[in-house]
Image (tube, rainbow, N blue to C red; front, side, top):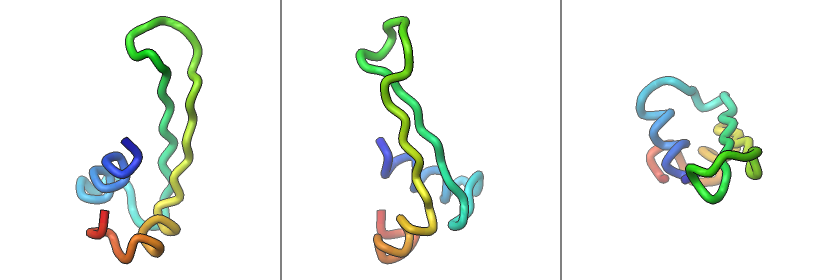
Length: 56
């Protein structure tokens, strides 16, 4: 899920390599309740460690 969000947002141009993405989710999906997952992706770090934007 995280790799897909990173690659899609970079390819779509809605985020740049210096941006951050905040992803929230809950499990099980579709059941009312509170958020039980939050992930902040720092794209510049992810791009550098992955070897480039196309490496995902």
